[in-house]
Image (cartoon, rainbow, N blue to C red; front, side, top):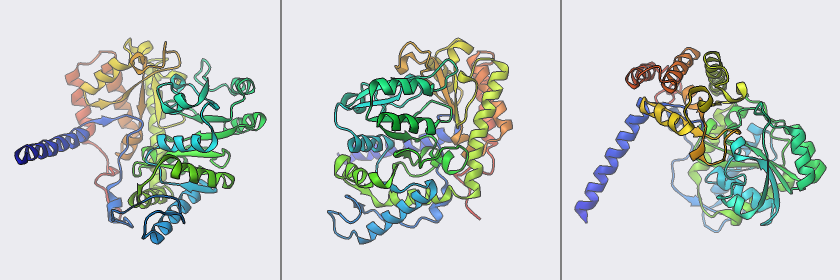
Length: 417
């Protein structure tokens, strides 16, 4: 057994080293990925390992007085950044945060209206194979031919379905949300309004994406992705829902959580109010728009919907390059560019194995310091690979060249002055 464990440890370290080397040799365009700034390691307020559970003032473990203070401060940071009444930062992921919201506001079988998965919605917004689709009666709205949500159609569906909750949020809808229209629809039919801004949270905090989070009843978001924080999630809500959401988190959907994640998340949220973060957030949106323009100029119709308001865009690879999303993803991976297959609203099904496009994100590239000029070169590489105009060897060499010129904003190595 000792020899077996020694071998396994050796293999584990080798695999980890290989993964790190791989990440440093590729360009990551997966919209949910990012780089966590290395400089935070020099200014972390807590390095301990304790866990806690329950809500502030009601803990089942001893030694909780300082834990309560830490959680209160972290929540105050989130409230200050986003302008909301109440914040909970315990959830291990945004999927779990969404589960807590449903637990607080709904009973099993209650009706919910949400954006359809292949129109950009998330699997926790009612996909049949997900807990949300199994526990609640989800009905869906889609997008029009331009790829935009038709809010008049949403109103019509809401009047017909009379949902208890309307969920707006996405993993592949590149446009801004008309939150005021959604608020009006919810008020008309007597529904709660939930906004899931897992992808947009950092852009909102950094003033690169306009979205008033005081309008919905409840908001969920990932603390990693564009926020560049520890993996986890935040729930924001009105004062009227604070007690219900607290109870839905504990004991409703989870038990223990690490205190360290509260402090790490608070530090990341504080950083969003710096000029450095605002520059990063603006860069992420700027790179996505520049990529969109470059693709559109060379291949009209290649970008689904014609543009983006966020840090990602959708490529209609089937229409523009004659390859589905899976083939496009694999072709780019061979040359060192990571993206992900994506179903488009025009797809024959919501299954990723039927994906007809790609989602191309820029948060990682923005954190790594890529410029608009780099984006133009990257667009040439992607288009060249997907159109089969360049060989894999040529494309891989071009990728290696871009990797080598990462700018001084590479957050993995930079330290604050």
